[in-house]
Image (cartoon, rainbow, N blue to C red):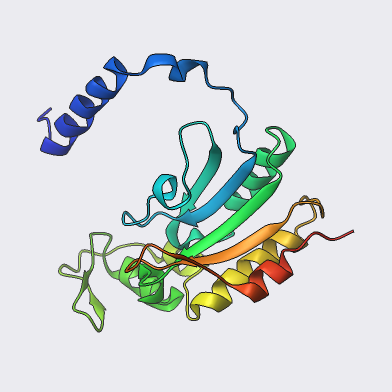
Length: 196
């Protein structure tokens, strides 16, 4: 098998990291600061830096859009129930790719072709038309139309989940990719307040 440049870079970086690993192997399983962040997978976001985290401090759950999907909530529930987190943050961000398409658009693109699509700044297209799968039309892709609204929706979804205890505050924020600032969404944080 031909080794890719990226594969080589990742394994070389890991060798250097492991060589200076020190006492990190002794970190406790529960997060030391007792909280979790649900955020987007966007490569421009570095939760360790924007939230001041060191290894072992917090759980960071990432997916496309930082959405409160069933799997994200599953992870948050495990984070609390088995590993003791007591506060959760939902952090979406400006200029999110999830704002650039709809469930219908991605469903149609996938039905036409499974290779990477092209975005010209206005619309999506497939460079090839090899035939794909209609399975993408049966997924809720949790796209975003209103950024603050999506944070509120996700905090409400978490708060109303039957496996989420009422004594965990859930905070809602938007990370600004141009300034690095976290901007609170007050209606989201209000929706995520502790309930008796």
